[in-house]
Length: 154
Image (cartoon, rainbow, N blue to C red; front, side):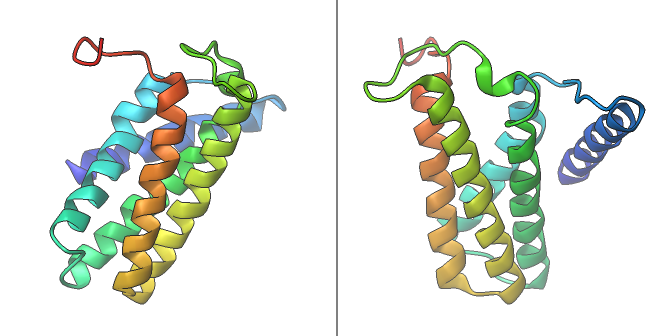
């Protein structure tokens, strides 16, 4: 499954690179839902699972935690490209506009993901756990405003 995640991300990035190289203007190829389902969701779920288990236990798990964090950092940039930051919000925040929440949350996600990748590379469990908690906060801050309600939450 992780191999499929990496191959999907590589494919998205290659396609985006080819389009960008041929065009000076970025063209969206994947929807937000596709980015979340193919890359961000699985990467975040893997990091949460490692965290619930007390953190990565060996070199292989540390390497995978770093790769998952790198995927989140990379794809957080996709969330800021093209028209994605301007999509219509499901709910409006009390203060500020929905686009502002989208941009700031995506930036927080990237910052926390980079910290997580660095902590994984250093095998610094305390820093890694703190960064994973920050990742969760970045996701929640955006999903509160932008995620469509599911039948469970309606």
